Image (cartoon, rainbow, N blue to C red; front, side):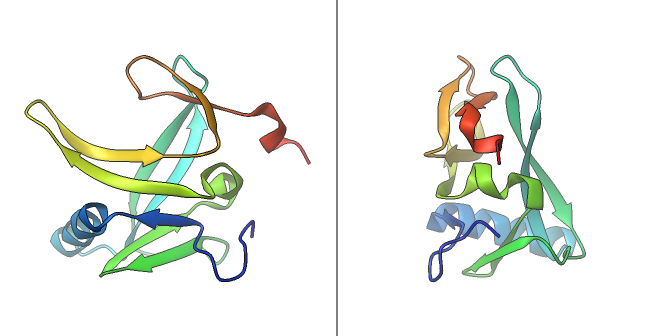
Length: 120
């Protein structure tokens, strides 16, 4: 929908692709849908949900056995994002390196996009 021909909407690091593939296999799901919603102290939050059916309007990115679907309303906010999976002594989780983010809260759970992104 908001793509550039020949360029994937999002990319995954090998760690992220491996973790998504493991989660898909463990739960028998066909993919992981990522999106954004209003919330948090900076205004927006990422969402991640298992999916068993693809919406015809989803952007689908497949890599090394991992399948990520981007919700239609989130595509303009997530284009160019790299998904990583990091493990530390205190936590493990997905990290989004998103060039469209202009600000984030201190905990990193909430983000803010350039206000011109949502305007037609």
